[in-house]
Image 1: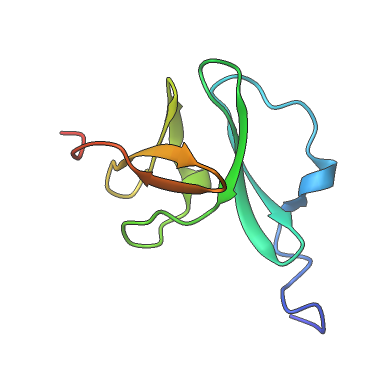
Image 2: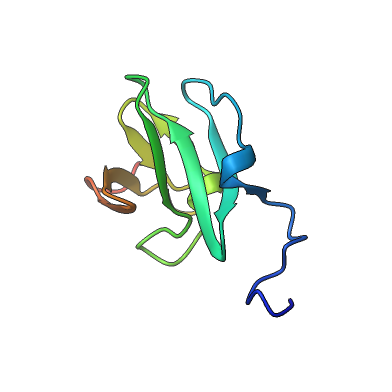
Length: 94
């Protein structure tokens, strides 16, 4: 970590450097000091959200896309994109 307030060598690409994101793909990136997940939903809509599940802080970028929802890999929470954040969409996957 340096004077930027984050580690610029943490392995996350800068958001401006992200190229084409395929439908169903989720990538970890950085928007300045902010860790984000970049995803292309089933409809083709590109979303950029905080890379933190509202359930327990797991990385959304470790999850996957299911139609118009993001699914957290840790506990299966289905999330709907609400601006730059995610909110729980329904009950846990079983």
